[in-house]
Amino acid sequence: MTDQASKFDVEGTNQSGVRERNERLVLSILRREGPLPKAEIARRTGLSAQTASVIMRALESDGLIAKGEKVRGRVGQPSVPMSLA
Image (cartoon, rainbow, N blue to C red; front, side, top):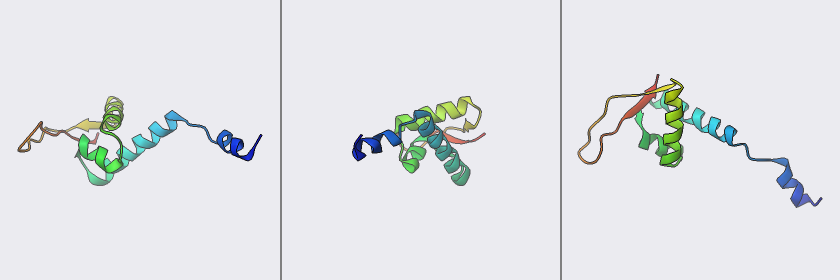
C-alpha cells in the first residue's frame, strides 16, 4: 500500500458525527444569541438553508428548540424565531 492510499484509509466519513456537530452548533448559537430566525441561524453557522431547516426540525421534534411568535417585516414572509425550549 502506498503512503497516499494509507492517508485515505485512516479517516472515514461519519454522517451521524457531522449531523451531531451541526446540531451542537445550532444549539450553541441559540444559547449564546437568543431567539433567531432560521435564515439567520443558517447564515451564522454557514449551513445551507435546507440543512439548517432539517436540523432545526429534528431539534424541535426532540423538544430541544421551539418556534416563537411570527415577526412581520416590511416585505416577504414573516420570520419565525427559534429558541431553546
